Length: 318
Length: 212
Figure 1 (cartoon, rainbow over the protein chains, first blue to last red):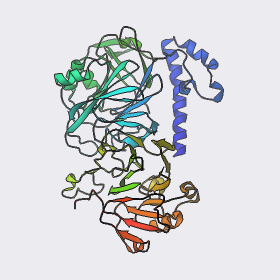
Figure 2 (cartoon, each protein chain N blue to C red):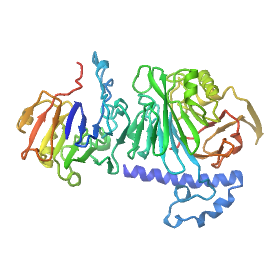
Figure 3 (cartoon, one colour):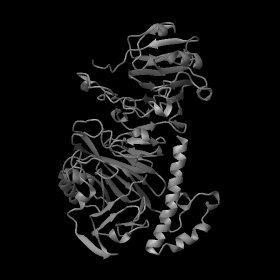
């Protein structure tokens, strides 16, 4: 057990170093940051700057951090360090590969429905509050609201009949986040009104145990957020062949083709596709004075505009 | 301090200050091996309110916190914690004698409240405790333990005052040697003063029976 953990932190450290290097190579702007590593407090203790909580050079004080673990599980950290984890899931060797929370200590854990793909709470450490109700509640200074909806029949881990789903709405450092959980239908006007204004929306893109892709796009239009995180889709790590993929969700977007190095690269408009070359595994956002959200982590910032309906396909944290 | 047995390893422990701790809530619909027995879909889960939910290990019949009602705090082992005056800690134990190659970890959870030391053994299945584990257990007043070949060694090592069998436990010859009283209720109350001076076993009736 300990051996595994040590190995993992070694990989993460090595990866953090390489990611910083790649960032400075790609953008050419971060040269200052990589030069100033020596002056960072904590360096003498052998902690790399990305793991050092004191490291704040070039970062905004009121930033929030969003990390994607897999399926519907996000780790959202406020500027004060309050950690919210949404919908932890059960990993297995068959189709949910390798990505699993490793006793990440949390302050609040939101659970939208009772499937093991959404409520495997054992992987979360610390002593978090579990929020799975619809009554508005203040936990660690953040108000959580639940909007009652329904989910479809879920075959993924243990079959669960269609039932109640709670859409989670909360505001972290002024940024309004809405996590749709395992929503199985288009929203009614009443539900849209209850959800209200949303800056960052997490939407299931699935078609089997949650919304079909066309309905997911409809729900995005109903809520009209600035940034959309698709989640719960089929990928190389979440091997559910009958599910929709992130590409299916983006297939109605405009594509920009760029000739480079002899082959054509395709970019979806207003989509940030984080992979191991672009973006970071912890995405940072701040609220600007005009009420729009700005992404401040290193990566392709120009894809995220101040207008609505930008999409970020996040990278897996582990 | 009140103890209410739901079924398997799931208990509700209510302290004198009214803090409700639910341990190892089970997934009512799930049957680990084989097809579900008829009527098992109607088996009620742990559908009561709690302040704290403590989970020993991630198996389906021990970790379904979703059924517990209301807003509560979770404890899944790791660092010791204190929630609302209840001190919680976990001791790493194993599900069987095969470690990582067997059924994996099944830690024991220690609950200290009202001056009583309670140890919930989860799905403990080692043939005996190691010296290191025994040192971590310390004084044990009330032991909630699954029943099997391994229980004899466990009780001899820990020397508890009260044993509450759980997890498919049935009264057997060994249990009868432990000053057994079989009760027809699922709740029992202890305080630090009324704790028996000699070992006593109380076999309760599960309040969430399995339909067979």
